[in-house]
Length: 504
Image 1 (cartoon, rainbow, N blue to C red):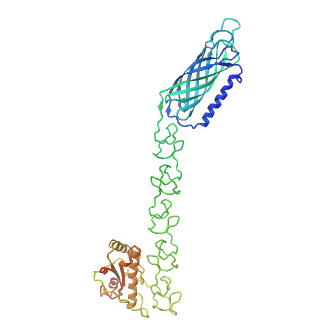
Image 2 (image 1 turned 90 degrees about the vertical axis):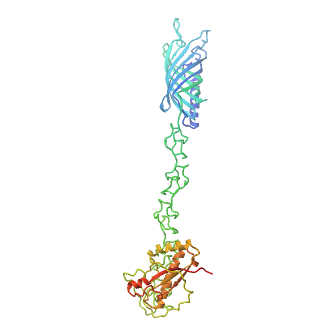
Image 3 (image 1 turned 180 degrees about the vertical axis):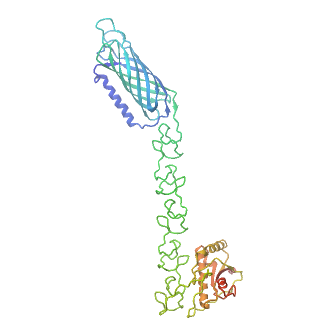
């Protein structure tokens, strides 16, 4: 033990330097959870003690025995016994110096098996019995006690064996000397960690349980120093598991962090305000269909995306001009103008009054016959020979009154026809339009042809090849029944489909 009356001089300066070294190590090392949980520590060390000139004792080697128990929160309690036999500087005599101390330690964990520590406790030092001479030597004999403070470090050699070094300062008040003395010693030895057990990593994220703040991390997730998973895009799926790490905020994702798109419009569910958009439509940033011309047919399905406002369009979004006067249906206030007549911007011949829409009778679900017009129609072109296959009436296919505009209820049956034709590409069919006998034959022929073409156009939009179908209008030339009552006329207004013979 080194004894100084003035601790700020001599070897006592070594203690602040050792403290600076320990704290520098603590600041520059990466603090990680220890891999083992320690319970008991026993050890031995070689020590060097120097008692200074005033004590008239030379420096001497000695040994130290230690035993301690580790507590939670990186604290430990320790007892220590030190023995040395320094020689007197003025005689060959030796002194027997023993020290006993009890201290509390706070351990700074460094890396996976190393640590530094701060030590504070109380110790008692005995210099041997005092001689009977008067006055006795107040320094080299008797007993004293006081505070013990120290700094040290441990370096792991194996999981259970650690090299330990320490510097300690003992403030001693001797029973023969009222003035307190400061003693300094250094030691290097070995510590055995008894009852030490590995600290588990329950969730396998690389962060041991003693530092893991998120103990149930999913396998494969990337975690921070506290064992908690990171989620850069905030979708609830941790980095490392997230296969789509740049998901837009608010999107609904699956178990691997990728978005779902129920209607395949490229707007993910959760952001998509219209999750049932029809296939093929163009949508806005919220996933809702766009309709640039406001005709009720969404962009993407609309084959005529610049339709004038108010014009009547078909299932493809294209406006019709039933009387071919250059004024679109819906805008045409005289929709049955004679062919070739000069009309004004409202579709009417000079002096002609606009007509009101024709209201169909309650039982007419197809179309009412258009009023007769005085001008003759062009002659019907010659047709090929009638096919011999049995016709099938498309009972569910109906039109708006006096026009070739399909009613929405027709789409279900026409979709079924499209599936059959797509499944049988070698099958060629004729689509025949028929009217009742109201009106002139030219008007009936014209209207039936437009309706047959409207059906063909719808099937083409569903993917059926144009060449697989022939559209023909028969007017009122092939009635199903001679009945002229409203019921009989409704039966005669129809669309038929029949197979054609194969092309030569």
